[in-house]
Image (cartoon, rainbow, N blue to C red; front, side, top):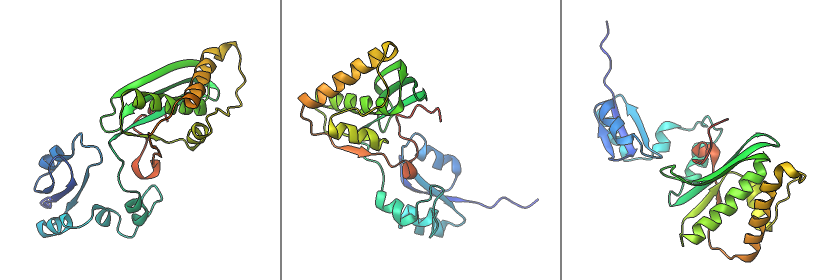
Length: 213
């Protein structure tokens, strides 16, 4: 039986960075570290040389990633800003039972949530989540940015309106009461929070995602 070839592990981003000689030691550096960057190499020299370079140059040399983004595109996008909160909504059907929430981007600790509502849409949920996030950050006098993966919600917030085609009825009254409050908040409040589109193709699902896809 042939002897298993030894590997060396380069960690560009982790609890500790450097070159490590076993997977178990490497794993300790990347476990629970959001956005960890690491790769194995067949020789110690190669691993040390890689540490001096850029992570993306070694994992996707001149190739497009599974996301369809090139190395250059990924480098241009960079990493998420973890001084932020992320919001998302989930709807089982459109319309259907809907809920939304906001989390700390790094730890994914839930900061607020609403729902489930009997009848809603994902767009309405994303809009409400954004406004809730703006209100939350203003209340806490926070300078964090706000991530969403919904361009529609970003547009509605800019226009201070909810352009949903969902018709109001007794079943969704509670939801539309919240929508009305959200619109009123936007019209009556100034805020300095920067709203940023979450780059799903580069970073994966937004941290506030409900994991039901």
